Length: 233
Length: 107
Ligand SMILES: [Zn+2]
Image 1 (cartoon, chains in turn brown, blue):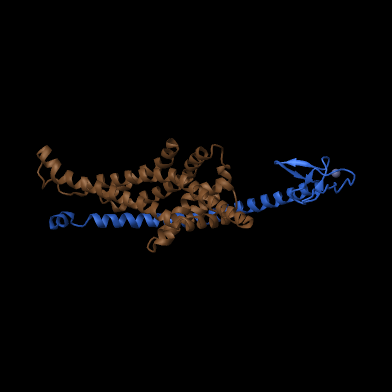
Image 2 (cartoon, chains in turn orange, brown; image 1 turned 30 degrees about the horizontal axis):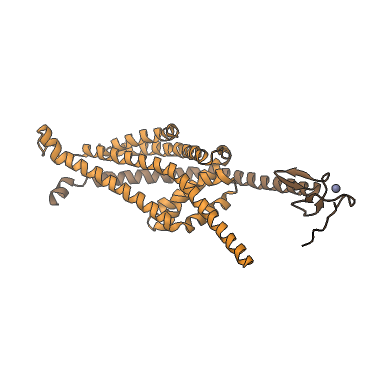
């Protein structure tokens, strides 16, 4: 599934590198072009990510899922709605929280049951609602890990510039102050971190989906067993 | 509970081997069609076939609706995404133009 993921991310990464270059050299006039390219690369990434998740899903199930092509429009529509909730509802945390998990579950849910779009969205939202506390734990852990890694990269950058490079290479600290050029390294590092976490979550979200589903089934079974035992007693 | 021997609804002289899962009427071996591991009568199979066809129609209707919505909505969505990217990157440049050296020396 790594080659599939790399195929999904290659145009996105290339566009992102040009954006980082434009930012760190302050070429504001170049931004509209590279932003447009990044938007197209995002579309490409979205077309491929469900295929990556499907590969994981087939590994988990041990048998083929439903065909992706037939359900791709519905998956993309759900992901678009979910990322709308993330981008515009980000300030009031809750829509972003549901959107984040809904976007990750869209492909596994539709390729598992092939039901109608609205039914699957409703079911997925119910799962997320039922597992909100555990999911909050998952997203908190992801956020903390991501921020810690970002902070680590940032501090490493600072240390490199302020102490290591001057003492190792005998360069004057004043010459090596925080120039905008050195920010490009930091931005590249941050992007690399994003890619690592994105790959991790693309794969892990399928497992989380099946975990949520089996827990839901498990509690249903317990409920049914309870009523059967109640009747016998 | 006493087991009462049931007769086939179509052949009153033949004992039923089971019930149709859809119509719940007793049927003999000749009237039974085994499909997907369960027993159906002729009428039950016809009801199942109609149900499946309606389901398929509904789901392909949903797929067509999704595709149409996607075709109509995606230009707007992509434009909003483009704006989001552009404004964020402009903001990052503004942020980096702060005098960071002064900020760090102030710490
Ligand atoms: Zn009969």
